[in-house]
Image (cartoon, rainbow, N blue to C red; front, side, top):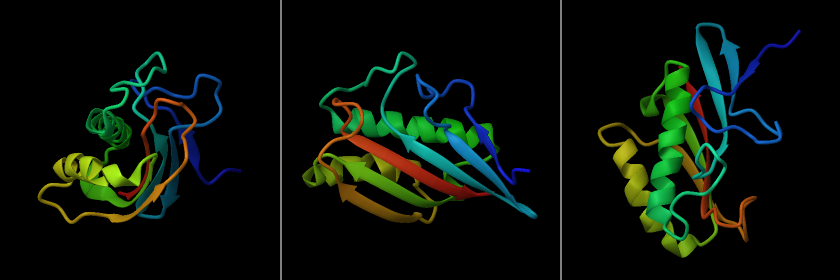
Length: 134
């Protein structure tokens, strides 16, 4: 018997080959842990939006994270950790500026950001995982 459920909320692109779920929902008594899969800036047809534009890609990633959170009654105020993968760490300020918009007025979560040589889609400049507790 599983103590968690896996979900792909409507409106959020999921793996075209069913290789992953967008979120694991783990009950913790009176709270729930949400573990979001890494989100990239893709559209419903699995095409990267904002090719070459880290700000556009960052915004799309945050929109997708927001949609997954909302589907489970959560918001950015419930995020406790972000893990960010950038293909060019020298552009971190572009991502940081966009990210700050989504955490304006609330305490920012813990965070790890690393540079990677590439992501699973060649045009993707960023991938972000999130963990939330509601």
